[in-house]
Length: 121
Image (cartoon, rainbow, N blue to C red):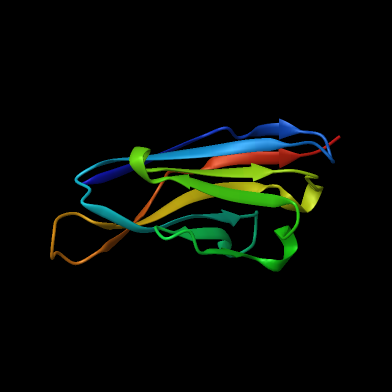
């Protein structure tokens, strides 16, 4: 089993910043990709950013230039630095990881429980 634990959410004013962290633990041989999704009330969960083990990064258009994701492969941790936050960024942010539990095994998709980010004055 693999556990993903997020931290760093909270309430921030428009224009402010937050940094999310997500640490993976458990049965891990390698992590192919780690990333962040978000789900606002009444909306579907959407990709925010993802980063592969090789450092390739994809951002969704609404966060480009404002959010930065990074990864510490040695610590199995992924970060999301969120700057210039807007009210429309308000959502529950979920960590995601595609994990290979042992050499030669299939990879599985895991989710954290989510952390609330609220952008409001």
